[in-house]
Amino acid sequence: MISLTAEEVEALGQRGYFLRDRFLGADLARAARAEAIELGGAGALQPAGIRRG
Image 1: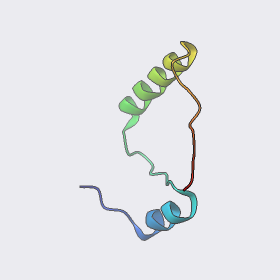
Image 2 (image 1 turned 180 degrees about the vertical axis):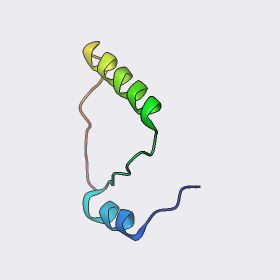
Image 3 (image 1 turned 180 degrees about the horizontal axis):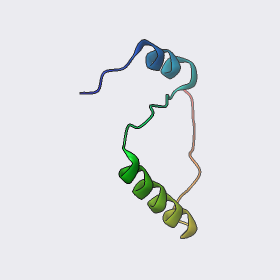
Image 4 (image 1 turned 135 degrees about the horizontal axis):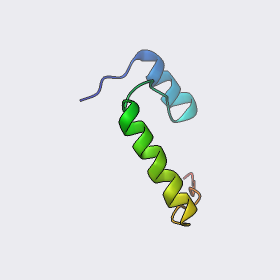
C-alpha cells in the first residue's frame, strides 16, 4: 500500500492529482513514455471525457 503525504492529499483535493518524483524509476518511466508515444501515433488514445454530477 502506498502512503500519501499531507501535501499529496492536499494536491488531490485541490487539483485532483499529484506528482511524485521517481515513482516508477527511470527504466519503467522511459518504457511508459515510449508506449504512450506509440499509442498516440497510432491514434489509439482519445481525449479524456470529464463530467461532473
